[in-house]
Length: 174
Image (cartoon, rainbow, N blue to C red; front, side, top):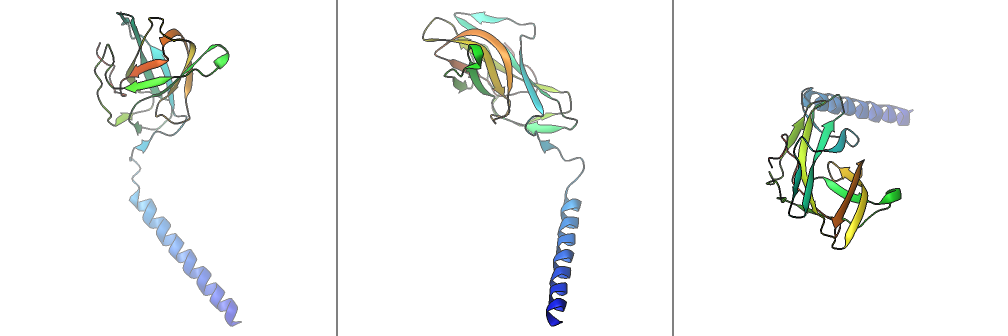
């Protein structure tokens, strides 16, 4: 009988400690706290935004990422990029972060997106015919994770080399 009383006492202590810890954690979290954007909540695409980026064998487009969740969330950094050929075959891709031929890099900083809001980055490549990667699709990972969007991207890209700016809550000025 002494064993069962000890077991009950231990169980009661664990339950009480767990309840206290849960209560403390719940009171420390504010309902308005903005969370980091979770995988699958950001959808990426390309857009011209009414501006053509072309000159001196350079071409470019804007990347646009939209928060498709119902919650406000944050993220930062540079898009992860990968070129795909016909049939979605992987092509060797080299991404350079920083200024592009057409836009200044805003630098890595935190972006806060409410539901439905978008952020932008500038994407540029050359097309002189040097070791051309004939791309048909582009994988865009908003945060560099494994979660990505695949968009049509019918471009010849020299050496599979892409230049991209950091994400910004406003489109880069070109």
